[in-house]
Amino acid sequence: MLKIKTFVSGMLSNNTYLLFSGTSKPRRKGILIDPTGCFDAVNNFIDKESIEIIAVFLTHGHFDHVLDVPKWQNRGIKVFAHPKEMFNLNSNRTVQMLKALGLPNILINEELTEKKYVFDDIIIDVIHTPGHTEGSCCFVVEDNIFSGDTLFFKSFGRTDFPDGDFDKIKKSLIKLFTYSDLDYKVYPGHEEVSSLYFEKTHNPILMYF
Image (cartoon, rainbow, N blue to C red; front, side):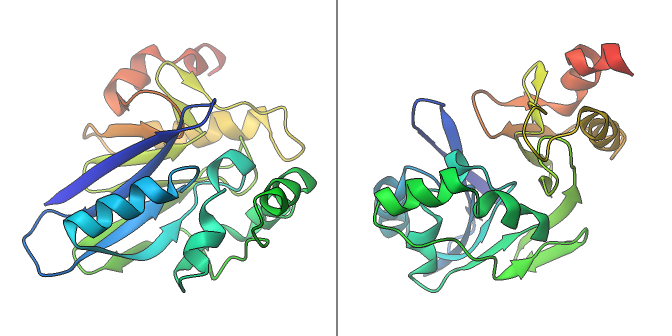
């Protein structure tokens, strides 16, 4: 059974998610989504719970979602992200913020495509959802969707960035809303958890459909 641990950090209330197996094993595997500003807290937790981080998945490459990534890469952990997110990972703002923290630039080790990625008993179904950024992705794991800055509780991502596009985020949200007839918990990049059923009927993007 999947377990999810949320770490909240920064003025923007960024959510870092740790996915790990609930089964009792001597050393459980863990996946990090958008690790930022909580490196010590994550380390304390995984040491206590005997969890080994085996991959980092990025919903997109904006600076506020990636500030811990080089620290995990320094440990040999592979970073999975859409190739079009190199545009944001290489942005001057991100590079300068990492430099101020004494950290190197971020490299994508594995380029995400729309398929399922299997890590023992954790299966991540990647959905490309451009709009907030060109390479934004959402991750479906069991009955959970990790939506980054594409979908929020009663809101959706900004599209006024250089690679943002309002028409594309509309299409991406239609894609999410029609992904399945089942309900899913929605874990966004900021603030509170929602559900796919709720957003299908309450999200303000609906007025633009």
